[in-house]
Amino acid sequence: MLTDLEIREFLKESNAIENVYSEKALRDSLLAWEYIMRLEVLFERDILRLHQLLMQSLRPDIAGKYRVCSVWIGGQLKKYLGIELIQSQMSDFINLMIESYKLETTEEKEIACKQAHVFFENIHPFEDCNGRTGRILYNWHRLKLGLPIHIIYEKNKNDYYEWFEKDTK
Image (cartoon, helix red, strand yellow):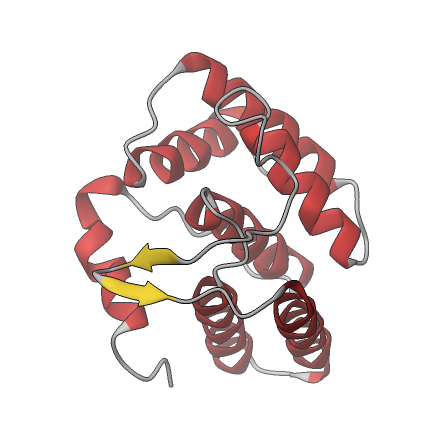
């Protein structure tokens, strides 16, 4: 069982990766974490609700809504190609997570969680807060597979960013 201290540390570090340091944002992150941890299964509406809770104070105008514009990710333009494509990719993301429940070894589960997280981040479904949303989903997924929480520290964010530059196998 996770302690409140571990949860706060994870959320604080996840926020710091995105240069989000306010107490209000941390409170919203805690609400989002509490919401997602009540779920046994994940649906698209749950991801939208998670994002809404995370962004309710910072950007209520986009909270819980898929992006309708192009965005820059790591110096590259991610063109907006329509809501239908984002919804289809999100369905693929959820199915990828579901498939991981068939895995048996810890190593296979670790790889599957990392791959699903990279897949989600490459979709980049939201205008903002994809990283924070994705890291909560990543750790929810890990816990559902019986793996421990993985705190990605802000000071190690360059190692984390390497996940997106190479094959995760």
